[in-house]
Image (cartoon, rainbow, N blue to C red; front, side, top):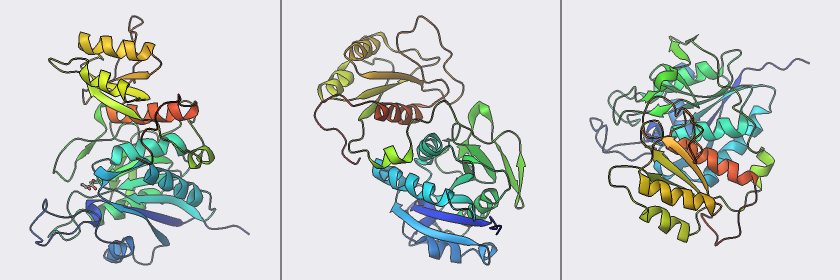
Length: 326
Ligand code: SIN
């Protein structure tokens, strides 16, 4: 018997979209992650009668995102994506670390169906909240035949997991895909696509089975190259047993010479180092003379996720336990 594939599963993690404020005019003095997903969906008339299933996976302000929540989320995505009657998933998420979660999920799932992260810049109690329209748009994308990969939908724009980045502190259209450009737009419920959905980027770093068995998350820290940068932070992290370091480098991946020396020494000592650019646009163009590998177009926070996943594929060096469940 043919199963109709039209169900959308909404996995909730909290964020401003589920936030409340005492005063409806207050768009910034609110608490994120206060309303459950059933309540949020029930408040959107355009979603009533649709074949939606809702599940509360977490209830946090996304600044507090942890590896353990990422793992739970990835496993729940894996579960639902495997159901024949499910056409796609929507994840409600805070805007602050949405791009990191999107990149993590695309890296570990590279799904053949759409996984659509959505969010809001104003709390659910605002005079004019943006969450309900974002939810409706996200469900439209998740239901679009042929849609696949992890994307973010905010303010009518569809961004791919590799490119999406929060670029504004308070505007409703807070995300950008930089010079890659958005994947498309949602226009009155229809998707207008400009380029392909996100696909697999290299080898899948690790499967869901391996992810569920992780006992210790690698500790990967970000250090920044800036005027007057020195080696003290790297030395302190090395002394603490860090597993990997991402340097938020200037321009096309350049690093202050004192910091670079410390990073080269850390690398020679077996610590994985990756250079990502501080620039909001563009990618690091590789040069054979550079001793520290570059992260291409990945921002420092996404490069950190990549390095962490890379380290999970190989046995971590025996050091003092780092970041249990962080
Ligand atoms: C959060 O990231 O959870 C709070 C901020 C937001 O969603 O805009």
